[in-house]
Image 1 (spheres, rainbow, N blue to C red):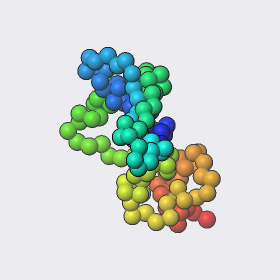
Image 2: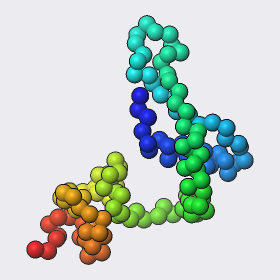
Image 3: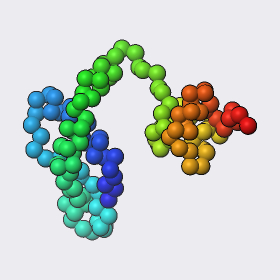
Image 4: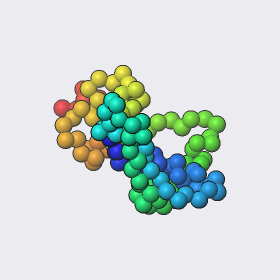
Length: 133
């Protein structure tokens, strides 16, 4: 089973949208492929349901203050320009987004701190070779 924390955010966003459409959410769960399933077992045993109602509804409450901002961004006629932020370093899309075509990105620096990253970005530095001696 692949029951990762990031799925909570995804389910919470979806639940928030559904909630804003006027539907009441009574439960939220993931239907995952069972790691215990073997050929010859009943098809009903292929999936396992993991309830995440409490976690998701709590996260929806954390997301609600951002609803208006999300609404404005997603309904804008022009896509916003991406901004390099410290959280980009762990994003699976980074190499195809802001990290595209940048060799030796500052994120390749071992143990790069948030404050050091901010200082480099404020100086316009995104690749290691641009760091002054």
